[in-house]
Image (cartoon, rainbow, N blue to C red; front, top):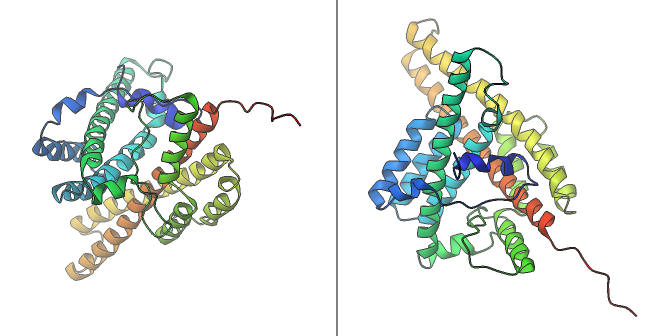
Length: 311
C-alpha cells in the first residue's frame, strides 16, 4: 500500500531512517470543517478502548473552538502513539509469522486495518497543519514560537518535504529548528513529572538522567533508546491496568464485586482521573520520541565538516 502512513513506520521505529512526506488520499475527504469533525469521530471508533483515544475528543473540542494548532498537536501525537503501539504488528511477515491460512489472513486483515487508520491520521494531520499555519496571531504563535519550559511544547508542525526547496545545509538547519520547537530540556522535566504521577513507572528518574546526560550532550540515538525503553514499560503497565478496569466493571455488573452505587461512582471518578494522567503521559512520550527521531535524522543528514582554515 504505497504512500500510506504505515509505510513510514520504519522511520519511527528506526530513527536512522529518513522521513518521507507522501500526499495522503485521506486528505481528499477533508474538504469542510464538518468532514474533519466526522473524521475525528471515525478515528475514535477505530481506536476506541485505547488509553490515548480520549485525546481525539480533546482535539475535536479544540477544533470546534477554532484552536487549530491545539487540535493539530493532539491529533499528531495520537497518531504517533498509534504508530508505536502497532509497530511490531505492521512489521510482521504474515507467512513467516506461522499458523495456517486463517491465521495468515487474519494478520493481513489486521495490518490492512492499521494501514487504513494510519492513512486517515496522516490525512487529518496534514489538513489541520495547513489550517494551523493559516490561522493568524494566536495559532501562529502556538505553531511557530519556541515553547518555554513552563509551556506545553510540541505545537510546532513536523518537517515536511512539501516545504520550499532549500540547500542541504538549510534543510538540516530547518529540521534542527523544528525539533528544537518540539522538545527541549523542559520537555523532559514535564515528562518525568507526568510519569511519576501515573504511579506506573518506578524508574521515572531515568528520564531526568537522560535529559542531563544524553540529550544535553547531543547523543540523541542513545536518548531515544533509553526513553523508548521507559515508554514500552509504561505502555505495558497501562494496558494491564486497562484490562483490570474492564474486568472490575464486568464483576461489578455481575455482582461479583460488592460495592454500593456511591462507592462504584467514586471508584470510576478516581480511575478516570488516573487514566487521564496516563493518557497525557503517553502523549508526552510520543512528543519526545518524535522530536528525538527528527534530531537523529538531522544529525545523520548533516554535511561532513571540512578541515578548519589553515594558519
